Image (cartoon, rainbow, N blue to C red):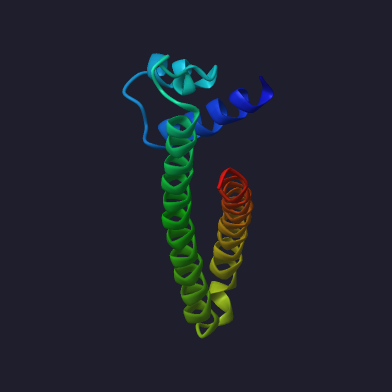
Length: 125
């Protein structure tokens, strides 16, 4: 029972990431109903679908991770450029450092989410 709720939440995360057209669509996945299977599916089919789903989820997380690393790189580049300007602009550097800190927090959370998903995929296989 708990296993199906976890899968439902993971599936909801994918649908939510893809920005569903309405709240109703996203909420229908939150209760795990997205993972309900018809009676003609075998457990191997279900397991295969779950593995395929987890692989797609990993791909999404890897894309998000690359995007975050790109943002981090851009922010570091801006900070480096600002460090070469007169002290008068030091407040600008501080603002961008705080923005970089926010990006780093999101990147760490994304990495943890990616690692957890990879572990689930490995367990499923």
